[in-house]
Figure 1 (cartoon, rainbow, N blue to C red):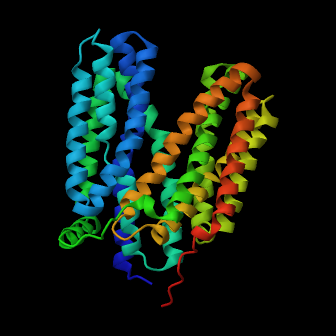
Figure 2 (spheres, rainbow, N blue to C red):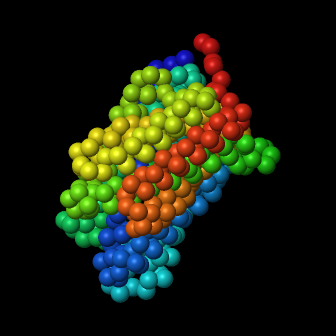
Length: 399
C-alpha cells in the first residue's frame, strides 16, 4: 500500500486534471455555435467541429508520445499556450471569414489540445502501487470525468449568451491555460517530467504503444465502444424529437451521463472494474445489452431516460477496466501514448457510429440506431474474448 501522502497526491492530481478537462468539454459546442454565427452556415460549423474532433484524435497519441519522452510539463504547457492562441484567433475572426480558414484553425486547435486525461492516468500507477486502489482510482476518474460533459456545454452556451460566442472561446482558452498549468505543476506531474528527462539520454528502444498486442486489443474494442456512443447520441436525439422536440434530447443525454457517474462510483467502491479479459467481456456485454434495450423504450421519454440511466451505468466501469489494463500491456516508456490511443479509438468509433446511425435513423427510425449500438457492443465483446490472451490481469502486489 502507498502512504497517505501518495494517496493525497493522487487525489490532488485527479482534481487538477478534472478542472483542466472542463474547458475541453466546452469546445465542441462553443465552436459549433461560434462558427455558425460567423459564417451563417451549419455546414461550415459542422465541418469545423468535425475537423476539430478528428484532429484531437490524431494529435493525442503524438502529444502523448512526446510527453512520455520529454516529460509532461513542457508538452502540456506548450499545447495549452497554442490552443489558447488559436481560440483567441477564432474569436477575433470577422463575420464572413473564409470557410477554409475557419476549418483549418479548428483543426489546428484539435492538434494542440493538451492530453490532460492520458497524462493523469499514466502517473497514477506511480502513486498507487496497490492494484485495488489503482483500479478504484481509475473507476473514480472515469465517473468524475462525466461531470465535465454535464457542466461544460451549458457553461459554454451560458457564456456565449451572456457575452458573445467569441467570448465563450476566449474564456474557455483562458480557463484551459490556467488549469493545464496548475495540473502540469502538480508535484506528481513534475516528478514524471524529471524522470523522463533523466531517462531521455537512454530511451526505451523503439517505444511505440501500438507495438503491444494487448493495447491493439483494447483499441479495437474501444473503436466498437465508440460506435455505441455515436449511434446512441444520434438515436436519442431522433427519438427525443419524435417524443417532444429537440429540447428533450439534452436532459436525456444528461441522464445518460449521470448513469455513468453512478456506475463509476459503485465500481470504485467495489474495487474498480474488471481484472481480466473475461471480466472485461462481461462489462462490455452489459454495455451492449443496456444500449440495445433502448430500442424497446421508444414510446416514452420517461422509459427512455430510465433505460439510458441503466445503460450509462456500464460506461465508467468499461473505461475503468480498460485503463487498469493499459499499465500492464503498454510498452515501457509509452504509457501516456497508450492512454491517448484509447481516446482516439473512441473518437474514431463515435464518428463512424454517428454517421451510420444517422443513415439508419433516416431509413428505419431511432430503433435501428440502437440496434447498431447493440451490434457494436457485441463486437467489442467478441474482440475481448477472441484476443483475451493478449490482456493479462494486473499483477497482484502484496504488502
